[in-house]
Length: 396
Ligand code: PLP
Figure 1 (tube, helix red, strand yellow):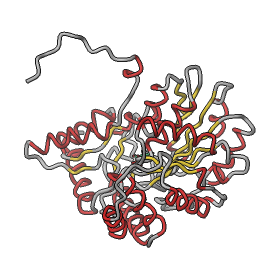
Figure 2 (cartoon, rainbow, N blue to C red):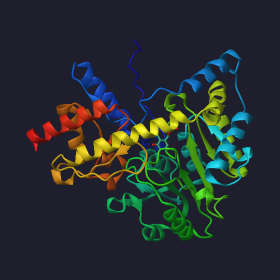
Figure 3 (cartoon, helix red, strand yellow):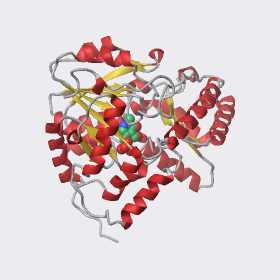
């Protein structure tokens, strides 16, 4: 055993400004409950429950045998940057060059690096509320001012463009968009994106467009602000492999941005990660260029689950849920239960054996909601509905 130190740990101020993702905390709590012998259905963590498609796994194994086990360029392997540029050019309808692509260990570093590279004290960053908690966390860490833009349930959790206009000031440095959205499943339409682009106009504001769920859309089509005329230089597009190809643990994502900014991100990569694992990058080429039928199969399965889970929730007294148009999250309004979100989420975990997240963990505007991840089997989702219903009958 190490002797206890008498010296107090003196953390930098910025360390206290870093937030977290409650999904990981609830997962730990749920595992502890399971250790005591109680069964828990996991609807808290946002990762596909499918295996990574076999063609991608095989490509990684081949790459390991071929010796792709060394450092690579911090910005990413040229072959994968080319494959990403081609994929984004085709899917977003704009000609993207490999020099505008950076490969990172997951999509998350693009978020962290973008905010760290662009925002400083006095700068304002607009981000969706409820939204992925890492946005606010990193904005605060950078010392910038977080400016939440509320999403509205009655608008299927799209933002109000007039409200966005009212939040933009001379200090706005960055606007974060996320579609399809975590935690609400909301999707911005082409019309929404057009109006957002119009509101930003010619201002020198960067847009971080988090499109990590771009291939998980059930109704309508994905549209990126990158495709809007005049936004090529002002857009940082974040996408990756985690959600589309069930590769969360591989840690691989990418950003598309103008080459000047790529240079700064590359320096951050050199300082933090050196590079993204080389053999996973080789497998990434197979993911983008190989057979895409597994992507469609996973999407269809999520849709099937959504179509069972949402009507099931709507049958439970006190729950009212819109049909999400994308991603794999369901975000019911629970205000009619009269319970605060966190208390209800805790009770569902501890008493009903269903792990989900409080909407308030995604921002103030998430109070009154819960987030369920439907990345679990239909059988377990049906069982979860049953457990919630039984618990509600007893407890409410
Ligand atoms: N953006 C959003 C909205 C997410 O929900 C996630 C993961 O949960 C990410 C980015 C990061 O994904 P990853 O780093 O696994 O690629």
